[in-house]
Amino acid sequence: MILVFAIEQVAPSVYKVHYIDHGGIEVSDPTEHGSICEALAYCGENIPAEIAQYVEVQYGGVNSGTTAVTRLRNESHQIANELVAMVAKVTQA
Image (cartoon, rainbow, N blue to C red; front, side, top):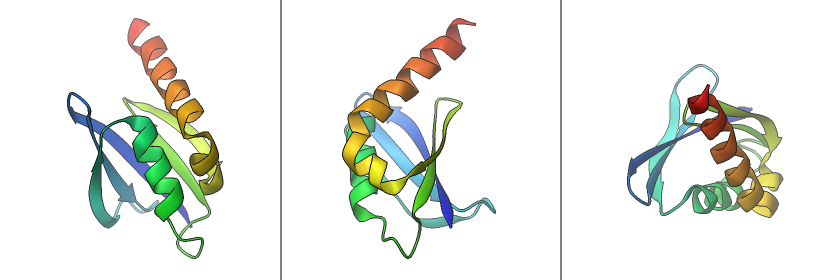
């Protein structure tokens, strides 16, 4: 299964992650984190392979595309930076 991680900023330095299947159903309770990077690393460490090996990360109206859960573990900082940069470009347009 490919999960969708929908990240929303709910307050300064508070990011809530919703775990959604492709049918639009939340499959787990949301979690809160102090940064996008922290949220991605948490997801990478805590999503069992039998639940999902691939995810799509959504933030600020953009989508990361399909990526491996292991990439969240190993490259959370880079993915977070890419998402923030994409959001900045979209909001400039």
